Length: 421
Ligand SMILES: Cc1cc2nc3c(=O)[nH]c(=O)nc-3n(C[C@H](O)[C@H](O)[C@H](O)COP(=O)(O)OP(=O)(O)OC[C@H]3O[C@@H](n4cnc5c(N)ncnc54)[C@H](O)[C@@H]3O)c2cc1C
Image (cartoon, rainbow, N blue to C red; front, side):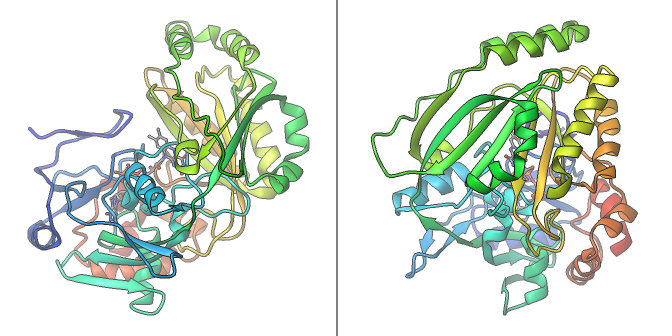
């Protein structure tokens, strides 16, 4: 039996077939003939977006090159390329993405389809960079869309969960090659929460990590700098943290003590180099994740509330929370589509229980006006989607027009968008 697993191993699917087309004509034929179909990127989503018992498409073998527009403001890139491949190719052309998230293993098409983001109060998610798509529709027809050609299809394709077609090529806004200086330092939790606005205003990129049982954060800032002698040291595998996770898995009650000790061991550091090498980090230890985006005004209160509940209920959450800022946008299904939001991520070591803890914390984050990251664990249903996203009706209308039979739907998508069938 064919088996497909996501990055964390929490989603195991048994597609009838995994198809790896090499060109657009072959891809269009597979799509046209498939009775049920999902397209996967790199499988980095924690939610079961790619689960299917039909055809599972992977685009990594598709032919195609990077094309830079004459004004060097946009590029056209294959949607199946990983962000690592894309950003390295951009660098060779003297270009950078304006922002990136924690890792670069995702496919471009997959990262856009869930609204993947980095941090920066003035910087939107990667999906806000897309200016045009080449799509294979469920019928097998190939179309190009942008703000002027097929504008509704374009609006839906910008953040689509793979529900309106298979993107083969994407036009993206880019910047002239960017060098970054990274600074990492330990700071008291209370002080950071008191000065969130000021920190966000004076940093291009600001995020922090916080073990729920400790009172200090690891603050990470990134700033553009002049090209200089690069100091991009290879990250070392974190054997100490791995051993601690195993200890917390074996003895969950030790979690608070271990986290306070680990926090005391945090050291300041600084490095600089090409943005595409500085943005991503190495993530060797598998984890499961839930992330909610709360209105920026509720940021500190929401974080205080999840920390308080974690402590009160003595939840053994082995990994730190992660806190970021993301700019507002106008994408129909984007959690950020009504203004800037703070992103609060809750991670759990993959060998420890996560579902009941995520469920309790999800209630708190929802109560603070949160909307989930589509690629991470959440329990929304169709009513929630329509309540949280006023423009989901527009998305549903486009989805129904291009896929009336629900060829691109799976069980998870039906829970969220079954109302649009
Ligand atoms: C270690 C790790 C770190 C992460 N860090 C971040 C982070 O910093 N910021 C953040 O926001 N998220 C982060 N994520 C979440 C991740 O970026 C998203 O879940 C992203 O969607 C995964 O991309 P993927 O290529 O693996 O897509 P998949 O998980 O394979 O697919 C995601 C969705 O994209 C659709 N899709 C894929 N390709 C196409 C295509 N060509 N056309 C149309 N639809 C398509 C799929 O159908 C599916 O609905 C992280 C995840 C992991 C595992």
